[in-house]
Image (cartoon, rainbow, N blue to C red; front, side, top):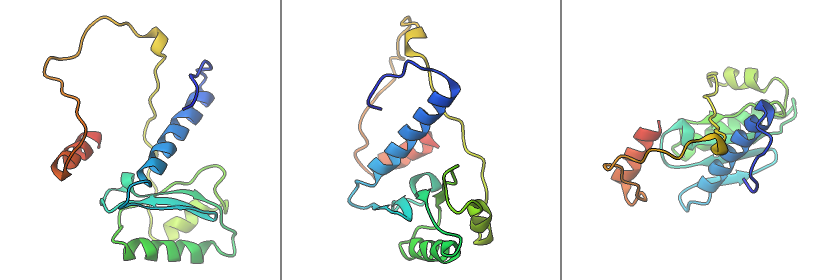
Length: 153
């Protein structure tokens, strides 16, 4: 986010959480091992890690006439890259309007979105301290990345 939110309404926080999440996905796409496409008609980020949280179709703008073929082609492309675990986001502005039903007809399953989290930082108390056992470090190897994915999941 480029600004500090002052409006903490549900609608504003929901939009900010989604924008932050999608910006993180797009950042993943900067990796030299990632495949990032910024359509239209499709925008996605794919990684070589088999986890649906790390492989995402973020935006879909298809016509009813082209949707089924584009979905089929995209799924075939993902499989050709070794990506079998993918999340395909269906948002209010996704097109066509029946995108969710079309995706399920192509074998995808519907999963309710997870919770978003936000906190009014000005309302937090500064008492207390971190555990003396807490270590914060950058992930430097595959083993560390696997631990990060496990904790993140």
